[in-house]
Image (cartoon, rainbow, N blue to C red):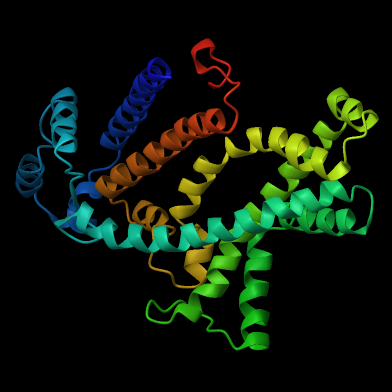
Length: 314
């Protein structure tokens, strides 16, 4: 186990290094407005050269990259030069991460306690009306544009229930609709995959043998089918949890949630290259951490998997 963890950790570090380095180099090829602001056309060449030198952007690319990694090792993600002029990025994203963490964690908890039981119910009633209703719900969520049902929930649920239409940090009841909206895609995904894995297990020979021996259907479902079906499911949970925690762009936008969801698009539109660089780093790190935790969680659920032989790795 320790050998596998070290191997995957090194692989994750290399992957993250490649992503960050490529992103860094590409952003340095962008127009200098992303580092100097929108009024760069009014600056004299001398002023532009002085500002670039003050930010270390006049040095060769490899020296800039080395300096960036030195700052990164000290927890310095740089400063925003457009979104909030000359403000440390860590101070900007800190409060937003906390908001997205709170909303995303509650949304994922709702998705887990709803989506997985939905998949179990659909598998146990395969071909009957609960399965058909669940399939209809999943097909709608997967096929319809998310903007459609997000707006539908916001418009009609607020009028029908009296819940607030916009997010208020001091009003917990205003969190209900954003959390439900954020959880819906995960509920449909967990329900779909849980049903699929359980149906696959129900058709295995060991299930037929257990039934032939007179083992009760309830015991087969809980002690065999569910335990085997949940193994591939848990591998996806950490990754989806981390991504959901960072917030949904559209959900946070329509409910005015001040989280991470719309921040990346905002800074891209405003060409704040330093902010884009920091946010891509964060999202890339979260994705890699999610894959790593998924493999470890799968082994904890099913000790029969031996990571030393590579079966649990991706």
